[in-house]
Image (cartoon, rainbow, N blue to C red; front, side, top):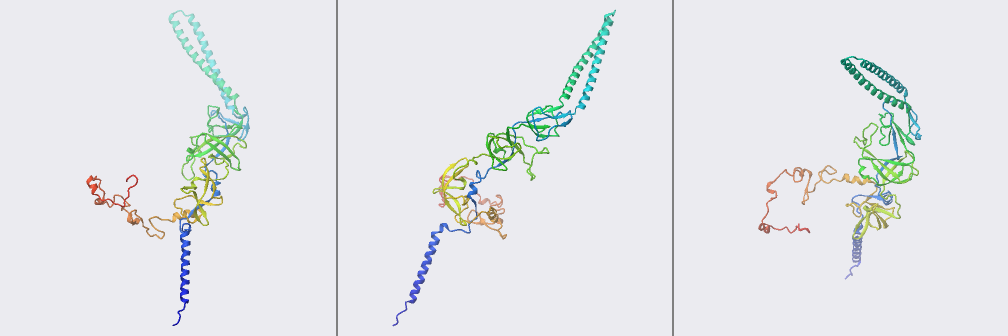
Length: 477
């Protein structure tokens, strides 16, 4: 009897061994690394550089306001609406001293008016002299009168002349006052500067005022003078942001051309909106009216500031304070029973990565990172939809595009109706829903299937079967 060959047995054993090795490899790769497998089909996650996040100032969220350096004190020089300006001696930007001439009125017309006033005065004096002479003559006649009736008639005439005399004397005092004022106007035809400063504006269209100087609202002043030396900063805020400002709030003032920084605080907020050159309120440029308001800042020092310089103003939330180490905004951190972690990019996907945190800065709402994160890393905002292994992108438009392509209910990408969960274990399409249980609550009303509002008796409650799948919550409901 021939001996059976052992070759088939050996081959079979080799095949079994290879199959076992392959199965072991699959088991090792699949089950051991199941928690860290890259889920290439997961939702795209937007990541940002840690260096950008931690180096963008106060969380990168400051609102900046435009500001301009101006004088602490501003005075407006008004012009008399009844006079004509003959010549203006200054221009915008000129420096003036108190008492320097600013402009002069045309005195030719005023001198003609003065001549007329003097003629009027002469006429009054002539009438007074004539009336006085008449009274004197009548008095002499009364003294020589022989009858009582004649004396009474002359006395009545004398009284009438005395009344006219008193009226003319009153007119004389008024005319003398007019002449005095006109002479003063001619002598003060040249208007001078009320203080040292710089000519800020000349308004040719000013309407005039009875007051010579105005240190408050200078919008209608003929010439506006700013005092030199003591500066403040006038900022502009829109109606959307005005309520974020408060008097006394510390601010940071930044140069627009270099790294110069000043500190100060808000001293005043104007609630009266600014007006544009047409006298109306500003608009946003998109057909919507947007009012702008002024607020004022006192800088702690004025070194390096120039009158008229444009600046940035931002609320001081501690962003300029230099701290040792890297501080990460708290909203990038998640804290659970295992400690703190962030969603960090690893290769081309996102992973939950533990970090070590230190001091907390309540002014900037950020934590000192002691380990587990470098400035060169990229992390994501901890959205609820993030899972280990989701792919990442630094292109925000690409990240947002995925949401535009998602359709929950309605039509799919090919126009086909996509059913969605009805919340009760079934599916429904938008057409099924029209006017049905998810449409008009009063359509397809079935009285037999509505709930009754009648209360059950204790006996009925005892006989009511209990659904064991319904588990009461902690409150017994």
